[in-house]
View 1 (tube, rainbow, N blue to C red):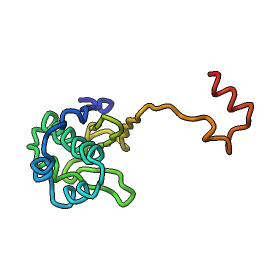
View 2: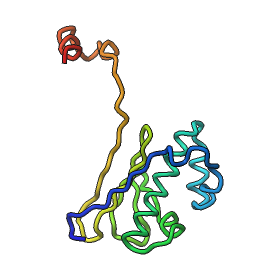
View 3: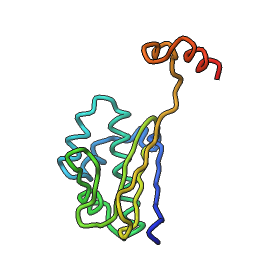
View 4: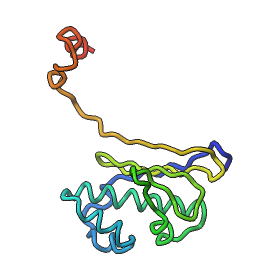
Length: 143
């Protein structure tokens, strides 16, 4: 890889449909698993589990790490930005809707890396009447 290359791995949470969560959570360090278990919605737990699994997969492809090493290396800054203990590679995780995504940069690249996935959904223009004038609301509706 050169400094500009990034590995992006994405997976649909449907891959986990019908699978029990606990065996997957047991693959992770205790603190990560406990944090994921606190999510009430099964979809939220699946997205967070899958984001970590795609990270571990990416690290196995790039650096030959086994799954437990990849999962154990995942740390977070106080603001929540993820980083890898024992690796210079910048990483980014995102999950929304049906997708979990991980980006892994080259260790020699300066700065960080970012990836974001968003669920596309309809918005009700009237919900923004406090910030949009009636003319702006009409323009949005007509666009």
